[in-house]
Length: 206
Image (tube, rainbow, N blue to C red):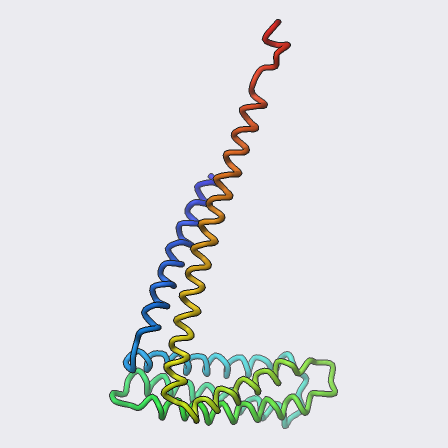
């Protein structure tokens, strides 16, 4: 039963790996039409970031000003994310440049709020490293979106494709490796069982 479960698990892993690899290859060679869907994914990421910002109020001990700034950051992230998703998926001929500019502006605002929070919490017992990292990443992405909207969008699209392809290949290699080790282990167990089951020479003489 355990062997059957392991085989099903490895087969499922191999199928998922194949799907990820194919999706990665597909994304690497797509143009503007798929870029709009990718921008929608960025908007979804913005929504998730906003929700996470609202939930993080439980982690940090905030004064009234910081709490208000965090609430504004979370709600604006959610609103901008939803706006980007709607415009990218349901509005025809809408430029990806404008969508990336909208995301860039929001990333800059989010970075300033994160820096303000980190500055306010720096003397507390809570680590502000996540806030500083978020602010740095937001500023870098915003700068790229402003300076190179087309190149950055295509680069991110291809980068995600490469990551998916690499993940798929890694999962497939891992499943094949585990399958090989499992087969070798079963053969070793069967060999030891045969040795234990053989009668001894003394028993044969008797």
